Length: 233
Image (cartoon, rainbow, N blue to C red; front, side, top):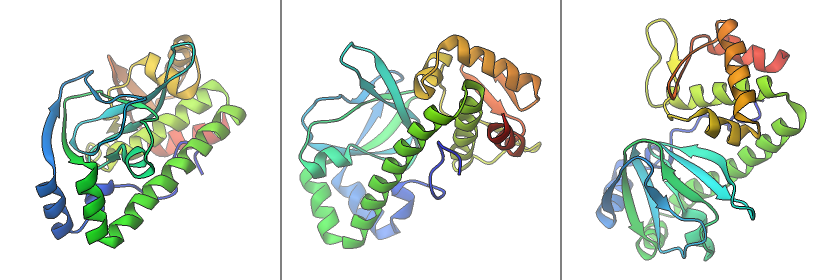
């Protein structure tokens, strides 16, 4: 199984709710727009609401003791944010920043817990979110310990292509444009590599005919081939 991939396809917390649950949760929420680079939540803040992304992409980062920001994940349409801090009564463990314009539902903590009490099966969706994210963190650590730079990037790009394909169909030629607009620095932070390592790896994957690139744009032209490259490099 790919180190960055989830254990099962994920369409997001929102899509897993039934129409009645979505109606009730929307009624409890306040819609909000976030421009590019705007923080949705800050690491260390007190928890008083959860967020459901309706449209757009955001990155999850954690600041180290020396002030360095490390990319941990991306979140997209349908994803639930800040739920662990709210339900666990803790401060936020990470900062979430908009990579593109984001439209979201902001649900006060008391209303969200009331929603979960009214719909107990929704608790299972939240629990599944916890488990998937722990699994993702474990796979990330495994990838860092066992894979070289180009292999890690190929694996990460395959994961991002699969995630993007959940929200937009591939092009007629089968290519998939990676939706989260991540820079080379952000990709390097996620895979624990320098920008120079990412640039070399992108060049190698282009030469193999597996991707096309532009400014903050990567298109996977051969997803099966990229998966195989990640395994065999």
